Length: 163
Image 1 (spheres, helix red, strand yellow):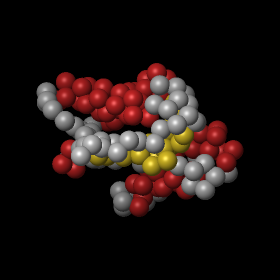
Image 2: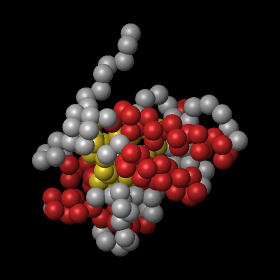
Image 3: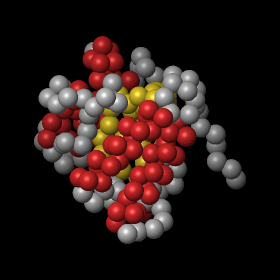
Image 4: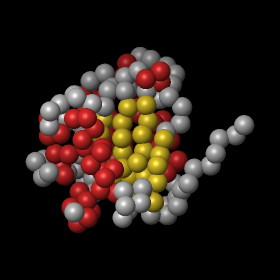
């Protein structure tokens, strides 16, 4: 049986996630986390997209993305594929890093946008990894709260306007 086609359309917002193969870690250290964010930044530029929120956990990640073209699958293939190559080369491994296809939910800008961004930023707190979201350096929370400068690829201003 073939896979169902993904819903992809111009200006769509998605909550995209991908988990490590066999639920194993996709990061061994902060260098890996920085590498994934660099791959994300290059992918967003290359595929004409923007990120509104992100959170890197131990064995998975969450991104809230908007694609200006109907090309989410191409963007995610770039992110997961290039990061896997970097990770495998750095750690002398081969094979899959991610479990199956990425997951993506289309986000309704009016009904769900702020909630999904909040969910992503609060994810480490809900997982009891930290007491406050500002204590997790690998999410967009501190940039949204203006505690650190937002990377160029993170559109905090749109989120602030929605508030």
